[in-house]
Every structure is written in structure tokens, then in C-alpha cells.
Image (cartoon, rainbow, N blue to C red; front, side, top):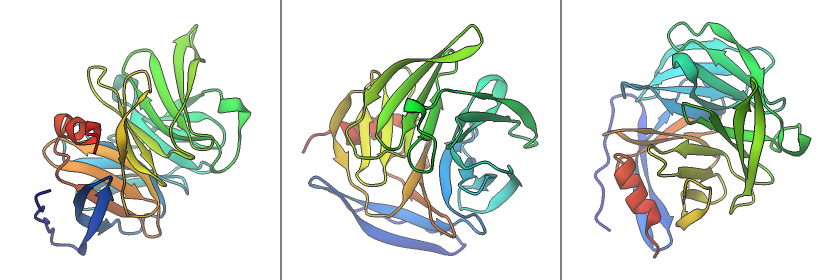
Length: 259
């Protein structure tokens, strides 16, 4: 594989290498300590491509620039936040792990717009046993990944309630996030134990695992022309960007290759 040139920002950026997967090798372009944020667990990109929204285990909602600097943040008391996605009406939807709550927030003001609940997989309340990642198709479907056992849970809205319509086992012992690709191209699955894996739109695994050496990876977001950003659940939190994943086409091409 051709070597990648590491890109440096001006603030406390550390370059590391050795990202290997089934015969392929990648280099992380930068690693950024995200200031005072602890255990960053979920990410979603701002539509303008200039910032990221994230959630942390200790109930924090934050907006970060692409260098990991905090733009704004707020505390969400009593919630163990694990996932984040864009919902309806331009809202941010935050996923609380232990109780199946979806919290609705205004992305500009971080004001609460209420909440709704989804059924837990097999009623598994508790840390590291329930939902870890969330995606919304912008219409009538929510996609959730249950951490352990690793399951993709698909919900549809019927009569103003969210109903489980399908549960599909995933090829890992535990999973931590998913990224919904556009135009029914599928998903990118993140497992802190295995790395990245491409799924088709029905949740069937494609290609092989793309291993990542960084520890405690729990969130991912794709910023077009910037790269794939990963959140490492550490204290302080760490952001990692992979610039060879410059868009969905590059992401699919790399992850779909079988060594």
C-alpha cells in the first residue's frame, strides 16, 4: 500500500501508525485529545463538514471542531449517552444506553425538545449489554446496534410508537456504533474488538474486518473530503481521523475488498 502523509494541526496532535487489516495497512493521520471530555462514545458530522457532535458516557453533549476543540457543550443529567444521529426536523437524537431513551436536542442551542423511548433488545438493561449506536434513515426507520450480544435492531414507527421489525445477529462478540451510508448502500459497523466492517442494507456482512490498533473505539462519523473520524472512549477522550476514507465511495471501496 502507498504510505500516507500525516497531517498536523497546531494543537497537541500526535501521529501514530500501524493500523493493519488482513494484509492491508493504514496510518492514522492524527490523534487529538478532546480537552476535558471524558469517554466520548458517539459521533455525528455537522452537515457543513466543519464540526462534529458527540456524546459521552457521563451524560455530556458536545460540539467539537475537527481538531478536537470544544465549541459548546451541555450536561444531560442522569443519562449514560452512547449514540447520536440526526433525527427529524433538524434535531439531534441522543441514545441513552440503559433505558432505551432517545433524547431530542436543538443542535444550535442544545435545548431539549423532549424524548421518546424504544424497546430494549431482550429487555437487557445495564451497562455494556444494551444499545451502543443509532442511525435514522430520515423517514420511518431507526437502526440500533446492541453491544452484547451483537445485534442489529431495526425499528419502524407505527401509530406513533417505535416497533421492532427485525433483529439480525452481527459478526462480532460486541459492537459499538454504525454509520448509515446514503442511497441504501448499507452501513459501516464499528467494533472496538474487531475494527470496521461493511454491511449491506439488510445487515449482511461484506468483505472482511478492517482492524484498528487504537483502543476503546466507540464512535465514528464521516466528514466528506476530510476523512473518517473515530472516538476513543478514554479519559481524556481522543479523536482519530483517517484521511484515506475521504468519502463514501472510498470507504466502500476499501472495506469491500477481500484480501
